[in-house]
Image (cartoon, rainbow, N blue to C red; front, side):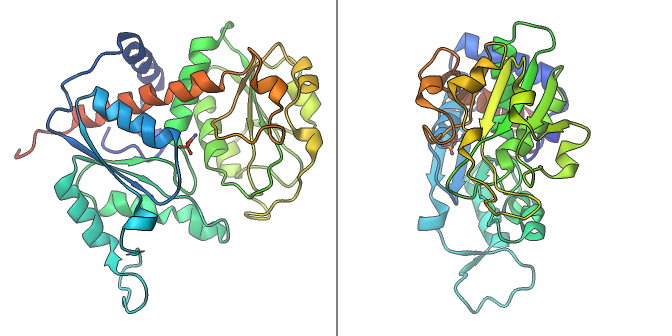
Length: 319
Ligand code: CP
């Protein structure tokens, strides 16, 4: 693995999941990362991604540097040929090249603007780091995807599944703010590669990017979709069709005890942070059906396996 930008950077998903679960079982520090440094740049807030990736790096013996790039860094210019006479002080060409002198792996979080679909789909920040860095780059959630979260979700389902081919439902839920499609996009992509029956349910107007959905079943009746589900992944996203807009705050889509009754005593998942009693009711989050804490715990092992593979693929410095 040269970079971890998209799920497609993992060729052997089942093997990667097995290796991550083995790392979880072993729970021991390794020396592979000794003398190596992970640099993490955050253009947006984070709790889980920041701390679990730092923990993963340290379990591998790495040093870690973290920067709130939105607050502490120079404003970056990403356009080639830009005349930099306004507020942007540093070009990505220098920034990425300089970071590559200090770090052996660079990891970046940069959310979409949710105003211009074409611009967001270019995923300019993460792809520019990939283009100009001379070390591997990891996506800590970009405009279109959150592949570390998706790998975590796959680990969690693998740990908990009781049947060979569980029914997994991704359901939209209401939220007061317009959120990216990154988490649902990556969840759909990873589930399409697993042996599961995947169903997406969302109100009309909230269908995800057809290039992501492919032939995955989309049902606009949430109750019908939830029938016999073994896993329910609850998540809000803003409209892809009417890009970045909130078209509905319909509370009947909040995941509740009544909704759980429709399922096969499903395990309930969410990437967190979650707005209680808006996205998922207290009664669910505080019940044994909720696996959100186990899911967040698995973030460490998803990050660890990815960093391990990137370190293993790199020749020692000087070669
Ligand atoms: N799920 C997730 O990415 O959490 P953070 O935004 O807290 O990193």
